[in-house]
Amino acid sequence: MKFSTRLENLLEERNLTQKALSTELNIAASTLNGYLRQNREPDYETLINLGKFFGVSIDYLLGVTNIRNPYVSNGCYDDKEEDLLETYRSLGPLEQNYLLKQAHIYNEHELDTLPDKKK
Image 1 (cartoon, rainbow, N blue to C red):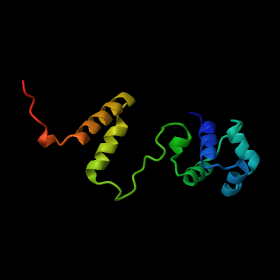
Image 2 (cartoon, helix red, strand yellow):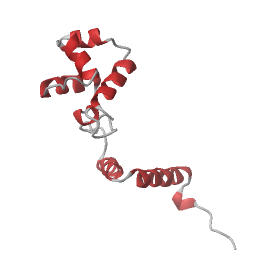
Image 3 (tube, one colour):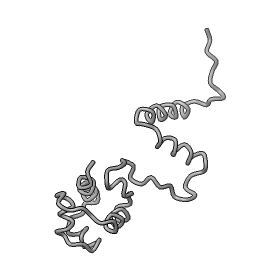
Image 4 (cartoon, rainbow, N blue to C red):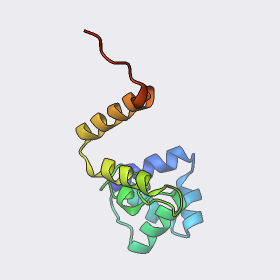
């Protein structure tokens, strides 16, 4: 997804006008409009400010990833949860889907108390 599309979507999600965002970020409204029309590209500082403002990573803004904020807050997850999250993110979409399905299966059943199959 293009930067301009991501930016437009984020503006819509927040119900913000271009003028409001340009004022908030202290950039000219014409500059922001140039980003949306793909006539201009933001500098690094502006990308950082946009990411902070919207709570997303620069990679997300640039369309490198669909993960809005891949950075884990310290203390948010234990080691096993972080490992699972890193593993999930390293997989392709099909494998991610398989992993999610498997997790849902485990969640629905107590593994130690699964009934034996009778023949």
